[in-house]
Amino acid sequence: MQGYIKLYREILQSPIWQDPPKLRLWLLCLMKANHQQAELLIENQIINLSPGQFLTGRLSLEVDYNRNVPKKYIVSGKTL
Image (cartoon, rainbow, N blue to C red; front, side, top):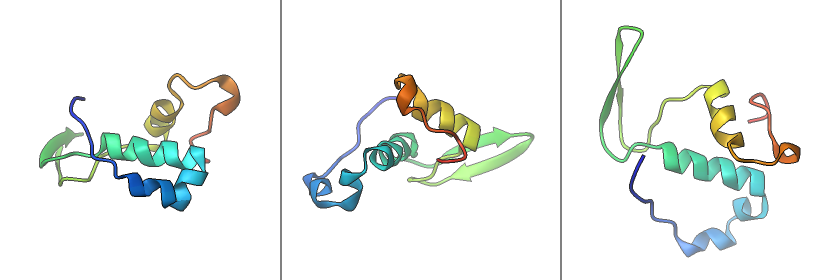
């Protein structure tokens, strides 16, 4: 993945700013979201993704969310 996202300073006034685990999850979703149309081949089926969409599952989201996180801050996939 390459590129950047725009993040407005108004986020400082958002309730999500007060909850670091939710902020981390929200930022992860922003980073994973497509910025243009995309086609994925999943089990012989073509999946069309629009800008802002991404394909994930509970287990892969858990791995991405907990990457480089100290053990005491790890969150389970069920919680996510």
